[in-house]
Length: 187
Image (cartoon, rainbow, N blue to C red; front, side, top):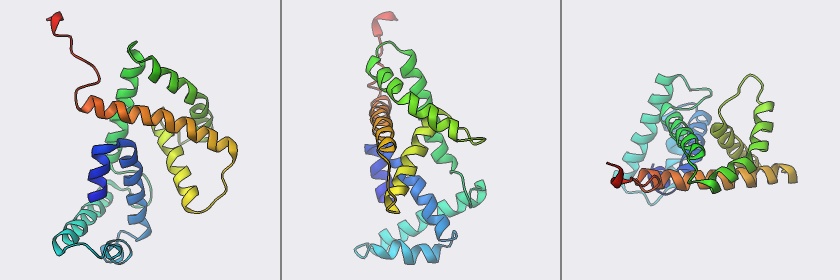
C-alpha cells in the first residue's frame, strides 16, 4: 500500500506491474486476509500498529473489490484496467502528434515484438499497451521463478521496456499538464 502509492507517483509502469503482483499474491493466499497477514504483512516487523491496520485494510479492500469484480481466479481489477486505458489513450495521442517523433520511433522499434506476442495470444488478444505489460509481467514472473530466458526474449523485453519507460515518463508529464503545452495565443 505504501509501496503502491509511492510507485504510482514515481512510475506508472512499475505501479501497474506491482499491482498485478499484488492481485496474484492475494489469489495465492485464496483471498484470505489472515493468510495475507501471515505471509505478507507480518514480513514488515517495523510497522506501527496504525500502519499495520492501514495495510490490512488496504488488502481487505482489494480482496473485496476482487470478489465484487469477479477476478478471484484471473483478470485484473478495474482500477488497474483504468490505468491501461489511460496509457492506451495517451499512446494514441502521442502517435498522432508530430511533436513526439522519438516516442513514435521507439514504438515502431517495439512493434514487431508486440505483433509477435499478440499473434501468440490466440483468443486472448489485448491492445498493444496491455500486450507490452503482459510481456513485462511475464518476464518478472520468469525471473522470480528462476527460469532461463532466451537471448531473443531478452532483446524483445529490452525494447518493450524502453518503449514503456518513455510512455510512463510521458504519462507523468501529462498528469502534471506539462506534456501538451497549451497555446494561449490561439484564443
